Amino acid sequence: MNYRQKKSHHEYRPLPRDHTEPDEKETMKLLHQRPREKLEKLYDDGTLKTGDLDHKSLLTLQQLTEPLQLKVIEYLETERLFLANSRSKAGFLVSACDRAKKGELDARGFGALDPWRQSLITECTPRPNINLSGESEWIAKLGKPEITIQVTFPAGEGFSATANLTDSIAQVKDSILMSSHVEDFSRSRFKLVHPVYGSLREDRSLAFYNISGNESLAAKLKLRGGRKVNRQYS
Image (cartoon, rainbow, N blue to C red; front, side, top):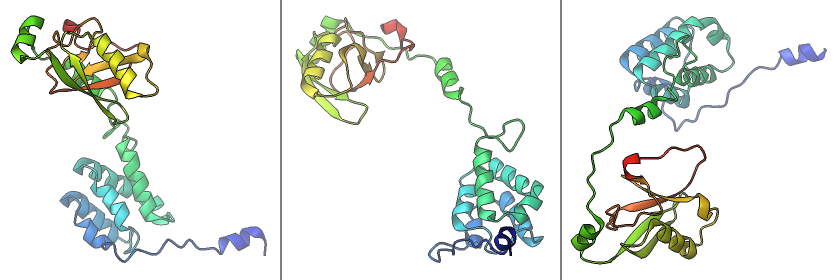
């Protein structure tokens, strides 16, 4: 018996089902009605048999939206021959779900994520109309010359420091770098970002941006080719 004959006698044996997981029929009830009915027809015509799909593969299908679920089931119907002869029906279904998320099951890219969607929404969203008080007016309004500012770094580390309202953003940055001992932050590439005003200019003071200490500033690295945020406050 040669190698080819010996290899042909090996049968594919899937991993035994975890009996702690729900049965596939129970998991199918989580699907939307139309996709569930179309999937049940594949069982009725003999394309799928009990035990072909497991709990995890059906959960992967259930996490899709109803239109994408229908798209996946239609793909299974179209590729019925390949599905029936595949060594792992569950793997075939998971692969189809992954392709549906990328829009590869449809020539028009149905279901694919638009990489420009968030950028377009940001550009089209009108900027908030914010009126800042004058520096002296803001200091008189708070009634105290010093505040405690909270700074959050990308790694999740928090830092608090006491600063004067007349201090510039450059002075605040210097005090943070000297006290926080945070690595990978050079003076030239370090910037402070306000949740509303965006990147803060170094020559402006805390009072100019009406910072009261209740908000949290984010410490970020400057990226090359970046654009200014909220130009009216730059």
